[in-house]
Image 1 (cartoon, helix red, strand yellow):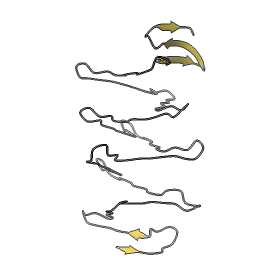
Image 2 (tube, helix red, strand yellow):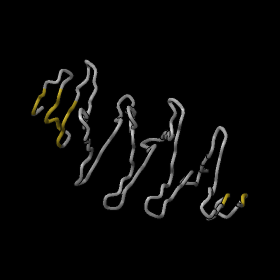
Image 3 (cartoon, helix red, strand yellow):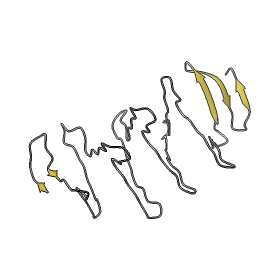
Image 4 (spheres, one colour):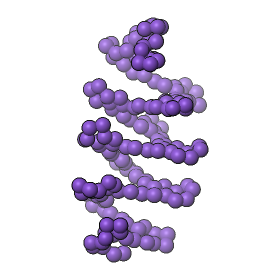
Length: 168
């Protein structure tokens, strides 16, 4: 391995191994990537062949977090995932026995999860086990549990007691 200053198109650390680990980091921060004012990517990982993993993160401690992302800029994205091929998956999450695959918070007026599809399905929930739920919605006494809109106009909603209202 080599390290030090390189040209703008090469890496400061460039490692090639035959089946080993190219870069390993241990300590309080195992790997830190930071861009300067004209940089665009702090850490980039690429898997070129089938069944490979670009980034794998694991935690074994109680309440541990494998991947944490924060966006502080206006309309910034903490995580962006894109799938370009048939039957490919941008993000696959597994929650374990009683865990969460993805746990998202929306802030004061934000959305914890936002799904959009041009011709596909914006948000899809499914279950296959006995007693499973494809979608679970929790609310408070002040919440509307679900609201359905077309062209930004509410066409149906379900209030906090489970009563449904249609056409507004």
